[in-house]
Amino acid sequence: MTNLSPLAQKFILHFGEMGSRWGINRTVGQIYALLYVLAKPLNADEIAEHLQFSRSNVSMGLKELQSWRLVKLLHQPGDRREYFEPPKDIWDIFKALLEERRRREVEPTLSMLRDALLETPATDADRVAQERMREMYNLIELSSSWFDDVQRLSPETLTSLMKMGSTVKTLLNVGDTVRGTFRKKRAPEPAATDATPADSGAKGE
Image (tube, rainbow, N blue to C red; front, side, top):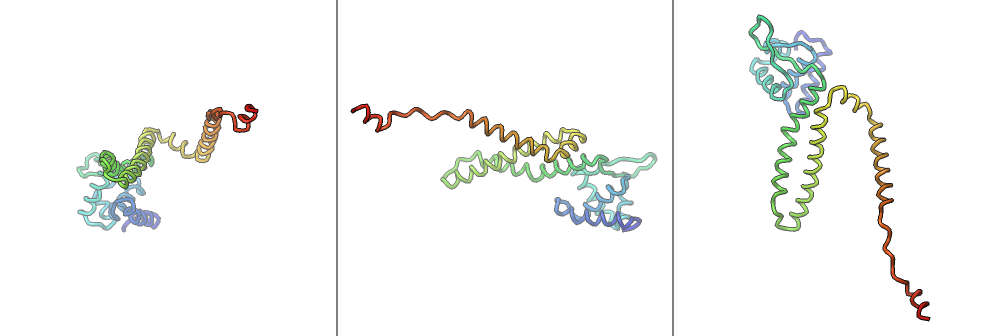
C-alpha cells in the first residue's frame, strides 16, 4: 500500500479479511475500506495506486460494490474519469449491507420453503418435516417484516431505538407478565360435577 498511514492500512487490511465472511472477496473489501476511511471520492487509477492492485481487479471490485449499493459513481467538473465514494451516512451503509444479504441469502430460502409447503406430504415423516419447515418459514417471514419496518425508520429513530436496549427488554417483560395475568383471570371455571358417591349414599339413607 502506498501513501497511506499505518492506521489506515490496518483498517483496510482488517476489512479485507472480514470481507470473505460477509460474502465478498478480500480485494473488494479493501477497496471499500479505502474509500470509506479516506472519506473522499477516488478514481480507479488512484485506488489501484493506493492498494497496489491491477486496474482490472479494481474495475471488477468496483462493479461488485456497485451491485451491493455500497459505492456510488460520480464525476468531477472538468474531469472525464469516473470517481467513486461510499454512502456518507453510516446507517445507509448498514441498511444496504442487510438488504443485499437478505436478497442474496434469505429470499432464496423463503422461496424454497414456500414451494416445500405447497407439496402434499406422502408420509408421516414428511408431515413432520413440513411442519418444521413451516416454523422456520414463519420465523423468517416475521424477521423480514421487522426488517422492512426498520428500513423505513430515520437514522435518528434507529439510534434512539438501539440505545433503549434494556428499557425495551423491561417493557417486553412487563407485557408478558400482564398478558399472563390476564389469561389466568379469563381461565374458565371448572365445570360443576355431579354429586359425589358419598352424597348419593347420604341421600339414599
